Length: 181
Image (tube, rainbow, N blue to C red; front, side, top):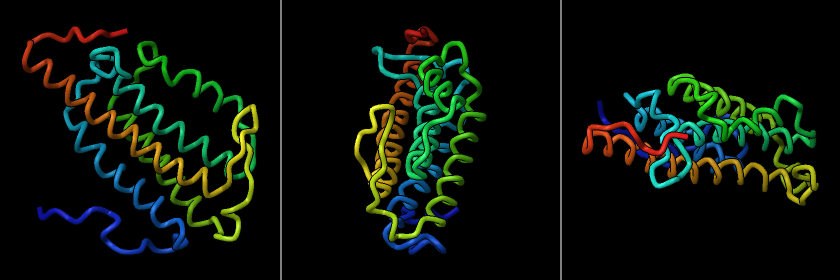
């Protein structure tokens, strides 16, 4: 199999407005990198927190949750009770870890929903004001969508490092005690 260039170097995405191409490219790149990085990642290590950093399970849940919340705010809607419950549970990985495959699949599905949202977003609405959170902090549609992409890439990077440290620690030490909480 030949490797392809990064998503942003493959050309414009059909039906995605030009100003939103970088957002879509970043999300698609993350969607491609995640499964390769977690191939064979043991489910029981989703809660491992080497040196007290956030676990792989947290990052997987958070990646999905942030994309969902940014779409809601961009639509100028408040978060639902289900979204608030999900947010509260994102960091509760030891009691609701799920499986690596299920969490990766949930992220893939949320990326698809975000891509559909991007395709349906006219560029004319990008500068429109959107309040964020209970405090109604100021943002715009563009700000929310760019944040969704930036936040995704930041947490993906953290997840990739944590997963590698967790897996390498097991190989080196032969133990699975990595500060599970």
